[in-house]
Length: 290
View 1 (cartoon, rainbow, N blue to C red):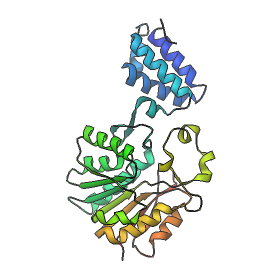
View 2: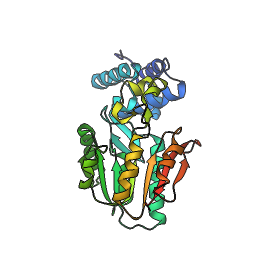
View 3: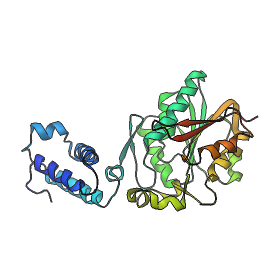
């Protein structure tokens, strides 16, 4: 596909092809990312050395990437990497792609820890996936004792690899959090944080095909008749697994933030709903149980 083409022509062709499935801004961002990651070519190189040829190996890598992208495979899975909280993490189709709104959840927890001057907080990340939340917290609070759990052994392999690459020590456990019989194996914590599955199955058709076709469904969806399934479990778990002055930080479905907060209100104080940068109610914070 790219044989005997210059860098400039390759870049232009790649960009034009992507514009058949996305807008110019998105196509440009993806093209820049792919060329830098797979070929070591930045936008400046395209301008400075437009006639520079590529090796056959790099041409093939770009061609394969483009074919995958045109099939709506997310660029993060194509490249096997995603950025989260200034970290480049490994991702594959066993874990969700980290989102910017989850960075806001991390920042919320970090601000609380700093404000309350918790020197060495014990933290539990429920449904860790790629490990992005747990690793971001540990990197920013090296003294923290962080535990991360997930039902997926494949996801935990990714999370463990990311933790090693980010030079962080985290305790990972394969746990089915919905099974309360497994809870006694976990200690108490100063912080519980989670971005659990919260999308009802009936909303599947509303999502982009690159999400539904490639991202792990068990990390996305909950039954239509139980949209708050994981939050109910977290509320119950927290009653016996929170230390004094502890808090729970949760990412939520914007349509269920109030219902989620109502779940915690009878048993927790300082239950608050937080908006993301787009003004959507996407986070719920609950204080220690009474």
